[in-house]
Length: 132
Image 1 (tube, helix red, strand yellow):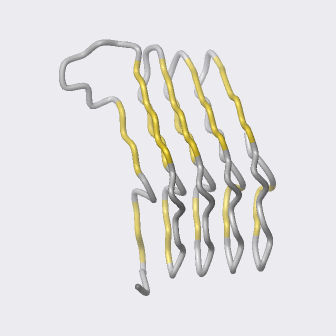
Image 2 (cartoon, one colour; image 1 turned 90 degrees about the horizontal axis):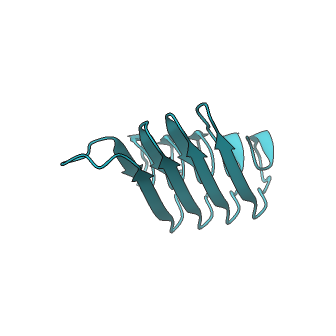
């Protein structure tokens, strides 16, 4: 589920979307786009994802490149039995892409000591070719 478009580029802007995604299978909601490029701006999104299996949720996009700027997002991921990964901005940021000020919440419904089934990334898991 994508909030605005598959690709937002040049000086395009994503809106402030509210995305609620629930499923018996895996879910992968993205607040604005699959990819943000150029000087695109992500919106201030609320992304809520819940499933019985694995959940991955992105505040803005999966990939951000060049001089993109992301919004201030709220990203919530919840699973009753799977893994949960939440990204405030994107999985991969490259160039001078800048993340926003995000709020992340992740919950796995299985009480396990030292639960490593939850992963939260404020900006991204990969910060590549950073110019600053």
